[in-house]
Length: 194
Figure 1 (tube, helix red, strand yellow):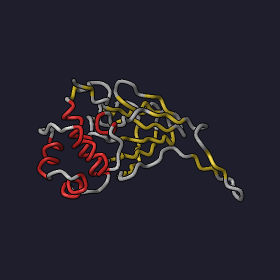
Figure 2 (cartoon, rainbow, N blue to C red; figure 1 turned 90 degrees about the vertical axis):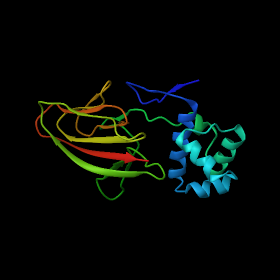
Figure 3 (cartoon, rainbow, N blue to C red; figure 1 turned 180 degrees about the vertical axis):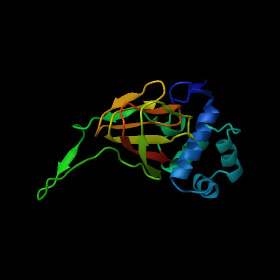
Figure 4 (cartoon, rainbow, N blue to C red; figure 1 turned 90 degrees about the horizontal axis):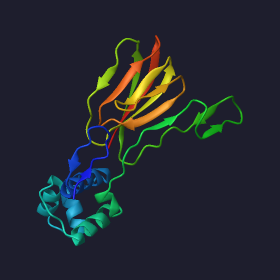
C-alpha cells in the first residue's frame, strides 16, 4: 500500500513506513520531546524509535499505539496526517470582533498551531515577472495578507487573485507563486514551520 503525500501537484508516492516515519518525527518535535523521552514513555527501545523515524523499521500495531499514547495523538494522525489546504478569506469576510470604545475591528485570519514557528515578511512587488518558489520543507505553510495592489498568490497549479484586505493560506511544501498584477503591490507574508 502506498499513499500520496497530499501536497498537491507532483505528489510523491510514499510507503506506509515513510508516512509513519515523517508523522512520528513531526509529532515528537511538536511535543518538544527527545527520542529517549518518547521511547521511555512508550516502553520501547530508543533504537526502535530511531529506526521508525528513519523509515527503516516495521512497527507492530502495539508499538504504534504505545507511541500514540506517549505523544498524546490519535492513532489516525500517524497514518493519515492532517493536510494543509489552501484557505482564502476575502477582505469583508471572517469572524470579526468590534471594540466598544473605538472604531476598531479585529478579524481572526489564522490560529497558530502548537509548537509552530512563524517568520513574518513585508513583500513589495511590481508587475512584470512572477516570483516562483520551489517547495520548502515538508509541512511549511505560507500565509499572505494583501495590503495594496492586486496579486496572484498560492500554489503554482492553483493560484488565487487577491485584492487589498484578502488573506490566503496555502501549503508551501509544493511549488508556489507570487505575481504582482498592479504597481506598488504590498503584502505581509508569514512562513509557518512545524
